[in-house]
Image (cartoon, rainbow, N blue to C red):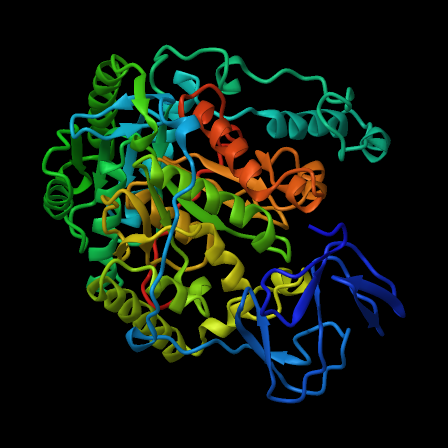
Length: 562
């Protein structure tokens, strides 16, 4: 890779700047000089040939937009001179596709230490789940969260509560001048002014009587009643998927009693999705008595089941037992050339080993559809993919939006000018392998290899959906930085550039910046990530999102969100 410029595909008529160039600079790529009349910022692209209004712009070898005005050679593409455009797709355009799996022999005998479930699947974590069937029970869930987490040692640090306590102490003693001179934007190690100790039970690290339970996870949501029956049914399927996820050992479920989503509906869906699951499922209905009776019974029964699941210990498992979600968020112009293809290579490796990976975010596959259709095993799955894409796009347009509106201001600022550019880079998370299966939202992931799962591009809605379909780990690439996590599936944050990793070390787990810097190839970075992932799956270390308690959970209301 040249040190400062990159042309991703031979057919492209844009070049990516890997560093900043001033206005008037002349750069050379493959012996061809280009004058940059206005300069170019790192992550952005300039055209290699003049574009007239209506002319296509190609990147990743596909159409990513059309010029809306004259663009001279060397000029940067922007939202002012380029509009979203994608190539048409369909079964008639299917082309033969060949795939040579990567050499995965170095990982063939590798194992991770996981929790083996009765249905044969293996978890990377051992969680107990507490969930409400309806938003009316959110308060009770949060009361249980406070009680269990603090008393069993799973609570987050009280460092910020301690800071407020110290500030109040200084204020009450007339020391406002001391508060004003404080420097809050430093690490706890540097700021010696705040010295009060957190309470022992709240530290989350000093007392954990259940050594083989990684945590008790408490979900809340705003659904279950008052919306459409379709939304309640989707929520039921999603919650059943969370209970059936191999990272979950069992669940406590709180119901009000009169809502759309009834307890028996959830129980039936859990068994339908996984007849061999055999996980304990504790159900409680508030309208059957008083709140105190409900909570007291739930606490006692849950505690007794924690004693039992604490008897489950990690044992060796093959890498084929991994089910890995592939996600990007807070993307930038480097996402599609470093971190995304690196996890795409990891996906190919894992598929070769018999593992499962899942690529979601259907709005961010807009423009990459034909390549995915060409990789389908048969017309039936190709048609299912097209129907899901077209139905979703139509629902979005009916709500006054469209896939072309997907890029966020942050995406655009950092080089992702159109949805087709963003999507072409996002699709690289799926590597090069043939596609094993196409799934609608909440359908379980069962086929070894690469699966496509219909979810929004929204970070949390997508990770929520992947965990609900069975992902026991999620890889999340980011160029701008996001703390996104998931309650039951560890979310690995992978930076597209080393600058981000150094700026947000409390969020980033792994760096793909060496690909941009020329220190590693995409393949080398993917191999290093898979090696690191084995330790994470074994519980040797935690993701930053796990350490921060970043348990994000947002069910998808179909057709409303992008």
